[in-house]
Structures are given as structure tokens and as C-alpha cells.
Length: 346
Image 1 (cartoon, rainbow, N blue to C red):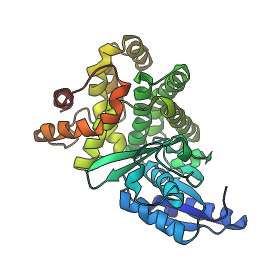
Image 2: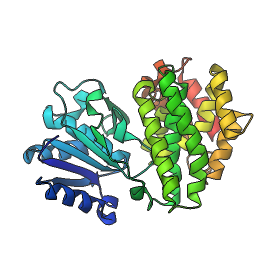
Image 3: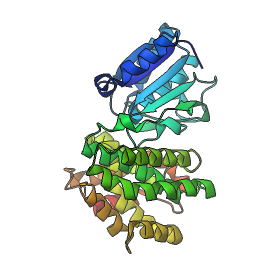
């Protein structure tokens, strides 16, 4: 796939854990000369991606390897676009915008949540508009994803829960998406069942490799479903919490999920009934809140330390952040709808 790999990773874990050194040593022993960019922050900014790409261009890199969580892998995929296409990055936000095929991408996930290692999406913070922007192209789906549960074992309980709920949100939102199909539904249901069984269990046994393996597979299955079905409004609404408060992406999804799904549940009676069966509940909002409680995730935004006085501001932001998801749900959403969901969530 290339001879001069650009390794894109975050600011700590891959280095501390020895994973970065292991990857570098494998590449060097194969006769390759890797270049390392380890400055990716949580929820990477456009400037970070452009800096990584500039390093890659300067060193004539022709392959990108993303190592870490979703932020590192998304930054790697976006940098791959800029290795073969001219800057700035913002010209490629949207669907299928790269003019030239991006450099090949390999991903090694260290969390079981984002599934960026198998998706066509790279989500980047746009500081100009204070929104999360998505670069979507089948050309950035990684050529190779290396899933090793060993690299997720050191993830602490709170991050294991949060990233696991990101995967859960992917699976549930893709399951309800009108862009879904029989195959994506099968992936979603398998993922949901695995997460419901494995995520509470792994929190009590963080070193359990079998539970870590099941979570990693569940996350990847949900990611495969995303490529055809996409997410619905929960993800877009969660972006507003991340941008406004710095709430972690997975946690933001988990906090809102009981309320967004309950708000639109009447549009999907058969699928919601299937979800309730998996959760062992009669009411979907109660079932999702109970699942959050089992993971030690707050059941409301106030409990999570957010400000109820921001509802109007957040609702306005939801309009922009959910725009891409609206064609994938069965109802029209207005700012009043978002405000009502947020009011219930507080």
C-alpha cells in the first residue's frame, strides 16, 4: 500500500502503552521509514489535520496509519485526503468531495466505540462555525483494520462505558435510519445484543480479554452498518454538548439517547419493540435510562453538570448539527423539537 507511512496518533496512550513503538518497529523491520505525528487532540480541529498532512507531504508519505481512538483515526483519514488533494480541508466536507484518490489508510483502534477503522467518515471540528463537520467518502474507508482487544484493556471504566455507548448509539441510530437495509439491520441487532450483554460485564472485569473482544467486534459491526445507514439526530445533538461543554463524544451520546429515541419512538413501533425486548423493558426511555445507570452514566444533563439555561442556545446549534441526519428520520424536526428533547433531558 505504500513505502513511506505517516503514523497519526494522539498525545499519550499509543506512546505510553508501547503500541506506537511496536508499530514503528514492525514497519522498520519491513524496510519502511515511518514518519510520526502524535499531536491529535480529542475531537481534532481542521488545523491539526492540516499539520499532519503537511508533515506527510514534506516527507513524501504515501500511506497513513491511524493509531488510537476515533479522533486519531478520523484525523488520519482526513490527512490521507490532503496527501493527494490540495488544502484547505474544508473544501472536502460533505459527501464524495476528494478529486483524487486519498492515500491508503490502515487503522488500529484502541477503543471499542467509534468504529472509524471501518467507516467512510472523518468527523472534524470546524473552528470557523463551531460545528463538527463530516468528510464522507468511500475512498477513505481503511484498506486494513487491525483489531486487537489487548490494546483496549488499559482503558479505564468510565471511558470503556462512554466509548461503548458510542458504539451502542451507532447501532441503534443506524437501526432506526430510513437509509438502512436488511444487512445493516442484522449488523445493528447483533451489535446491540453483544453490547447489552458485554458492556456492563466488562466494567466489573476490565482485564477480561473475551469481553473486550466482544465489545470491539460489536463496535465494528455497528461501524459497518453506518456506511449504508448513517446515524440519526442523536449524534448531531450530542455534537452540541461536545462543542459547548467539552463533553466526551460517547458520554454525550449516552446522555441524550434515552430522550431522543423516546421522542421519535412512535415512528418505529416494530423496531422499538425489538429494542425493548433486547433491553428487557416495556418503555424504551426507562430501559435506556436503566442501561445508563448500570454503566454509572448520569441519567440527566443536570446531573452531568450541564446548564439548563443553555437550552435555547443548544437547540439552535442542534439545527445546524443535525442537518445531515434529517433525511434519515421519519419526521421533520424544528428548533422547538430539539428544545423539547433537551428540556426533558435536563
